[in-house]
Structure formats: C-alpha cells, structure tokens
Length: 105
Image (cartoon, rainbow, N blue to C red; front, side, top):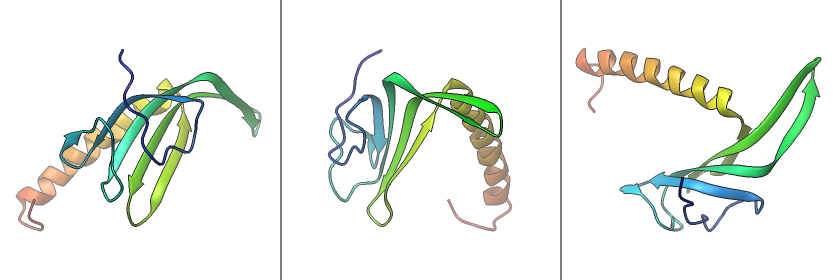
C-alpha cells in the first residue's frame, strides 16, 4: 500500500491518504477547482457507542466539490464494503436507465 499526496484542503491531519481520485483520474496533488475523492486511514480509530451499538471507525472517505467543499465520512472496512455493493447496484440500474434513452451518458 502506497501513500498518496495529502489534498490541500484535508480536514484531518491525523489521516494518512491512501488514494486520491478526481477530475481526469488519479491525482498526485488535487488542486482547487477540481472535484476529487480521497481515501485514507487513521493511525488511531474513533470509537463511540450509539443506541447501544459500538462503532470503531479508522478510515476516512472525503469528497470535495468546488460548490459544496469537503464532505468527510469516518468509516471502517464494513462501511466501504457496503458502499461498494450499493454503488455497484446503482451503476447497474443507472446503466439500464441510460440504455432506455432517458438520459445521455
């Protein structure tokens, strides 16, 4: 696993970036005005209990858009696996929507 460059607007100095991806593909150093997603890991997890359920988050997923700024999610591997599954389903359904001619890709 190789570390990626820290985005200029990173909200968490304790996070080690794993991968940045955005406009035009992988970004060595995201620049202002470009949208991107950065995935990172924390050396120390954030732990809490909510409604009697223990949570241990040690990953960060940040999305940046010039319009909305940075959106940060503190997560764990199970969250990332769930997101992968949901996005795969969404992409499959979106493909059907595009193929029906309702929207152009």
